[in-house]
Length: 373
Image (cartoon, rainbow, N blue to C red; front, side):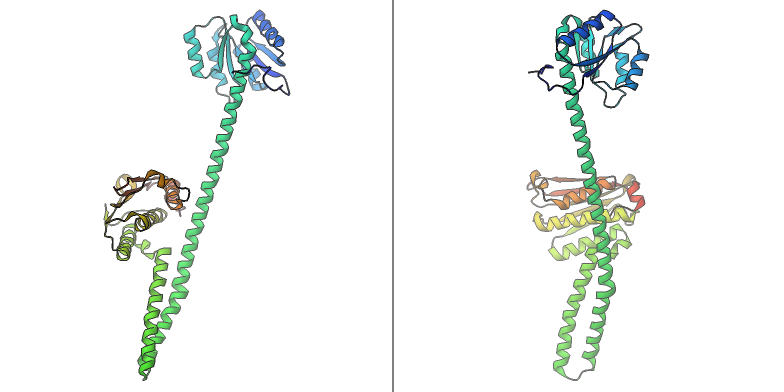
């Protein structure tokens, strides 16, 4: 049921109406109809586009009421002025000289409603409905704007956190290399010296055992350092991805084939890290979930676009698995690609493997500036 003015909560102020009408008699009839309906209102009549524009610029209105044909112009000309105004009031057509086709065209343009002057008694009802719909539309627009702002804030926060994580990873990697790695190497040197200069077999055996354990610690420190921020990235993206694939293959016994359009891809350091982390996360998912027999990684820079594709022949995954609330790894990769001006797509079907494709323009401002972490 469409509400009438009496159904609506009484407004705190009169409804303000701008009436575009050249007939004084018709304007008086509109005033009388609204007054009889008990609708508290203020109405201003204008009969030219100049006056219409001046009132719009000077005052705010709750609704615009317009005849279709006026001397030298039509309501469509007035509508072109109104639609340029952000948050404009609803525009209702009230005319006795308009066909059904013209009325339908007006509605398609964005008019709130139309009414024939012969049906004037329905005017309060039509105005109330138009204002209600306009208010609901504004509420939706405000909610959408707030949602977009909230999403942008979350994206900015995610980017800040990711940047902080990468900076902290780099700092920890330097600490491991400079302090822990140096100290372990020195201890290993001293143990080797003790082993060479002692005459006691037991002490030499203990020194050898300690050296072996120390080598395990050195290897673990190197793995940690490489996972945090692999120095191999300084040799280029292809070399870094090949190293990542070789390490994965040794650890899991799953063969990985890496192909590249060129051995030396000209990729900015920031985008190298985006691609490297994407490949790293994709391989981690293969190890944890895919039960794959083999993996293929393809790298290309055709047409100034960096493309990374990681494909496995594993069990695949259902679409709902990608939408799990805690799928932060994949969500983070998608956000990284978006921040770099690109996109990431996951193609998978149960029993038919999974393909992760990341595409990023090499000329993106983010890649040039180096601010994608």
